[in-house]
Image 1 (tube, helix red, strand yellow):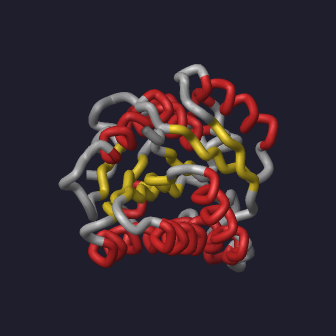
Image 2: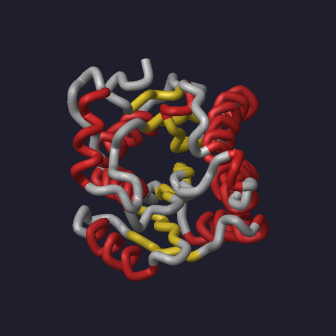
Image 3: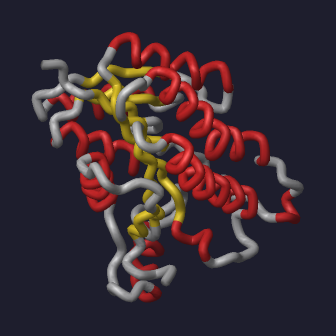
Length: 237
């Protein structure tokens, strides 16, 4: 029997790594995508293999449209791919209307266009059944002036998640996870991250492990599609 494979974009570090490890623990072989984190990708692959599954590394710059299709086509050619996790994302520090939208192309390209193109390629290669899970952000339910382009990209991805769930049924299930305070943002101190718990109803921050467990839950369901599960401790109720 051929073991199922999950492609996890941005799977070498942070939340993507947690998702890859959770799916490996569920018995999935992992197609681990990375762009620049080659050293971390090798380390993560070794951790994945401890679960008795395979881990193959795939480098691609997903801001380049042609590399999105090439990545999925290659993974399908070499594996029995049934799960696509769109986890790779960018979170620019200077991202307000006053910053001149300098990061528009890179942010929209990676956070929104890449998941769309990866999903298209996934559909082209998946005749029977499969799962697509998009990693979203719970904060976009509360409009604010910070991280403008990032918020727009994740809002678009939320809409894409619901649209694809309708368009791709019944063969492919499409769901999302809307993350709250899971990890400290790049550059932020752990102290700052822990203080965020003061604003969260559950009075604590989350962890990448919680995200991985939620992904493992969704790929095991046969009657859930179009759902966006908040992993935010109630912060954005």
